[in-house]
Image 1 (cartoon, rainbow, N blue to C red):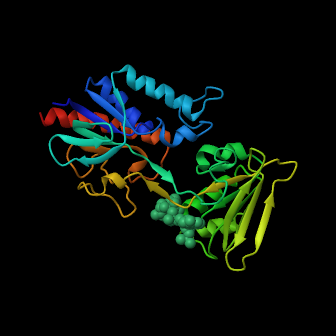
Image 2: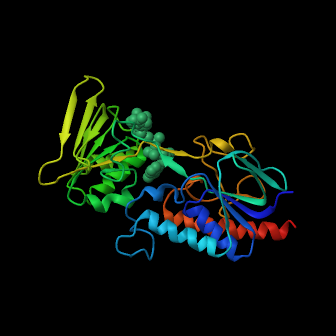
Image 3: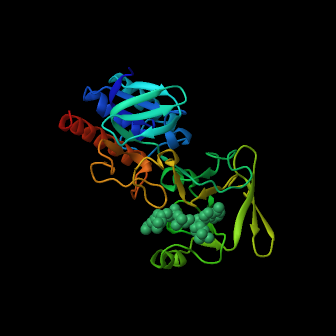
Length: 315
Ligand code: NAP
């Protein structure tokens, strides 16, 4: 018979690893399952400046996550590399079936994260972290006094574009229609911001540059006209931020009785409890207002503490 863990954590981003740390320290038998590399979205973040206490010169997402992984393992978390294909979460013992094996636990913490919807232009992957970003809070500093372009027209794009005006020399919002989706109150502030400019009815088609983002082709969807944007010699590069929605990693969880909102995020209460007893969610996969390393770590700590409580109350 396979081992029944106290806690199975699905996903080894900051939420999952923090849950593992707390669960391991509580002497619960814990297994963290991850299909790819640890870290989730911060694994592709070049520099981390906004995690409290994070002041090590040259700290990158991968170096921070490496220490988080080591810390969770130090307290006894077992690690499994596997892609989970199906889950049964309703019973007292939860079952996860992967490509390499199946795993049983008394509780499950879902920390599968979310990923930014890609802009969808040519060269996007190539310039990720070299001019292309999906996180203004993380990367605005790196575009101090440089021109920045933002794709999107919803609340996130407009709010983040306004935030970026505090750093960039100018911010141009590129939107595929000629009116914003963002709330009117947000629009009013945006239209008053002198550093914020708009390219309407436009989509980014192609990116280019010599290892960093220096060129971009933007197409007017009504006229078909292509505008070529080039970094000035003095600037050397520009930034491109995409805010066209995020996609939670919850496809796997669609038919297991778990409540999700209409965009696929998992609602929880303040204790990270989902609608299924013994099943918790932590990090970006939750319905929440701020998706950051610090909030994911906090979720993980709460979820693990509540998992321990659940186990004690349901022997
Ligand atoms: P959103 O409201 O879904 O807006 C996405 C934007 O991206 C839309 O303007 C959409 O264009 C555009 N878009 C989508 N796919 C695109 C594509 N393939 N190419 C180009 N543009 C594309 O997403 P969000 O702004 O991330 O907000 C998500 C949720 O969080 C919303 O409920 C929002 O209210 C909330 N939120 C609230 C605040 C706040 O209240 N301060 C801040 C951030 C987010 P169209 O308009 O043409 O569809």
